[in-house]
Image 1 (cartoon, rainbow, N blue to C red):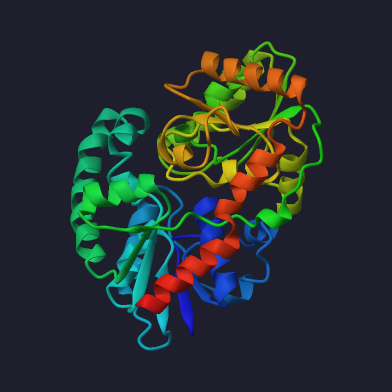
Image 2: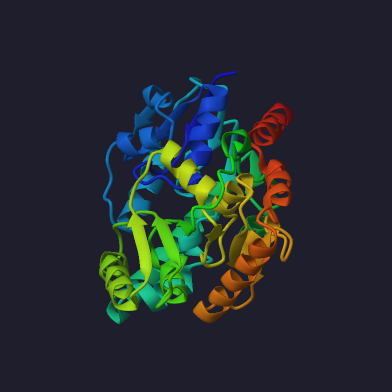
Length: 370
């Protein structure tokens, strides 16, 4: 079966992009996208997929123009009978369902900018004079997305969290297939004394909570991630975070890009893993840490409730703030002081539920049922 993968853009590699590239590798599929950064893709270990990635043309890097141009380009895409099946693996590629069938939408958000994040974006990322235009943009694209989803043949969500959003916003039922983690490639190489955080450096990830939790502390935090270009708030976020680190007198290091091998090494040698992301769709990074047998600390919200078992393989924090985050770090370090292998077996076993082999088998099953 000849399969094509649709993804909005591949110029900043996060969980959604890894899903698209993993699907392309497993099915030997072509990938249709817009912006491409070959260096990022290579660093994340997907250089074998590069020859099969096809760009529909470059689009603006700033939101919301980036989203809108991607939506428009995929709406115009018509590949006829070149492929037997299409997997839409990017939320802003949903419009590609209109002309390319049979198809599946593997929904992450879905289209959070239109629904789940709308009020947050208005309050924290836009100036008052920009908000009426944003409301109109959302209004129009909600109509379009509701129209396009009617063209989807198989609807899959990455978590219970996303499944409930699809039901709430689109009145559609979706099957849950959690994102893939190649657990066999992760290991535990002990504790080198630092805590690890891996995320895009955008406001919704709430990195400032992590910085304040390590303020005036001898503990070390390594943050892996990159700043994104987009709304004015994105542009100023780098200065905010860098200034906060300097003023906190904390031992915090930000690493903007690492190779897949380097990232796995950081996971394998950390003391534990921290995330503060707001209402995460699923959250693949916590599972990657779990695959190394590392304890995880996450907000008690979103997709983290589906992977983290509170007080078993980590800690879920209700109404997370820096003080609660610091307390959770204390609790885990106290547990590790008593038993350094306290979380290893539990987390390794738990992570296998989300292994890439299970993911691909479930996707194949859904395609065969079509």
